[in-house]
Length: 299
Picture (cartoon, one colour):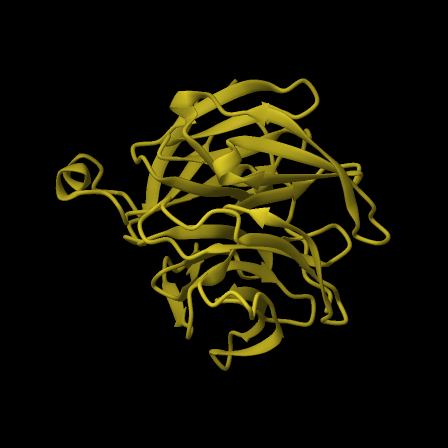
């Protein structure tokens, strides 16, 4: 097995970097900086970062089959025209909860956009509990709420056979699984497949690899962990030189590289001296496993 290498490839200083998505067509990594209201695209060849500032916290981004992107902005599902540097609203949720915002989101194997909400934090990890819900934006732009009573809706992905939906509500300290119906998008039969250990801290963003194993970024744990959702066992831990690791995705040539986002907000000045790369984008190579391409929203 090749040795694992970890490198900060973009010293971006995100307040809270999240939602890394590889765009093969432009050889770029998309990501967001939630409190800065920024959607970013980093071109690997030119090393240039292009940033689009939106009018509310932008918490997730996904590819769109029709061109451009879709993103969760405040409490809205939006279409993003990268050429025009503009966003238009597709749907609005949680209108009765003025303190809520979207958090993580991802497109399912059928091209629907799943995303969940949370109450806005008063400090990192400090918020009103059970205010969030999980939603799905269908291709015709109608939205369905799947469940509520969520603390911090976070990482999500689907099994390779498209029969299981994996989901994280961060403050449950658990990675959960649901039965998933590809045809309808419906989910049922929730159960836990992995409970985080104390030093792993808070489960955040998540992605699946080409062997069907889950990779979970551990906020305050400074690591990504690889899990076998069938056995409930942790297979691998990769530690990073920053504490607030937030999310991960595969990308690059053949999806053999992992990109990890992290946060800078909530780290005191002394902590920043210890981890000057906090808020940057990290690349992990030599994992010996590949990812799968992200799916575009088909609406």
